[in-house]
Image (tube, rainbow, N blue to C red):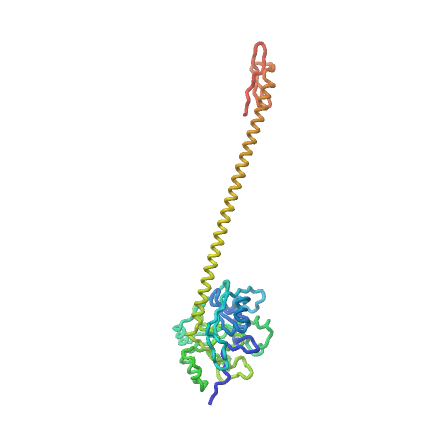
Length: 384
């Protein structure tokens, strides 16, 4: 009689490594959604929302650390060197979450949503798959993918932290099994299949013996998705399921393939909705703040322009007044000089009747006869 041997939950974190990577996977450097979460994985769902799992948060500093100092880098990178860190604002974990007891298959809502303080540019849209879509994906044997930052072989276990946080992402590919196919899987491989006690879950098989890509340490928090028309339909995280053959963990090899569960009734949609409400409020506040700053800047610019115009007007008026005063002074000085010229020149003898002369370009005199003498008349001030 068969025994259920060394079954390990898909997001199991071994004491010697930070979390559960894709063995036999394909290099996925540059992936549009896969992000590093500490030494494990996550999925950039939207500009400010990252999907991961609760035990990854617990094992990488906990809520206090992540909400104080946590950062997420852009998706698809290998090394974090020189990369911008996007600050974490909040981490949402279900109130019903309990740290997983993998040995006894006790797992409650192992999910977490990381809400960021600023946008990470998203190049590929992601949406949550509906159960109707899951049914179709299972029926059509659509390709299921997962991109994780874990190890790809047992030799990478127990490596320095610098190597762990600078690993490249790798891609797992499989198909989605219907709930009926999941039960048939356990009927085939175990006698105790009725103890699984997860009715209605879909499944994703990873068969190590067939060299199929397989979840390993460090993939915790990554997301299974089906891509259609450049949209990624999120099925669920690595936080559910029974996994064995975890990259040749000594003493944990099993006689049958691994199974990751996709529960259509998980709390992931409600967590995403809560995160979206937080992001919407944050963006509303940011808009109001930006609008306030814009209006303040416009008012300041207007006031500065008005002040400048006033200064320019005052400067112009001052210049005009100074010009008038100067002109008036010049005219007054000219008149004084002209009167002095008239007084000095008038009545003086001249030699030719009706002869005219202009003295210092101010006064025009004419030679007139006065009695028996020819003298200059009183003069006429010109150009005044």
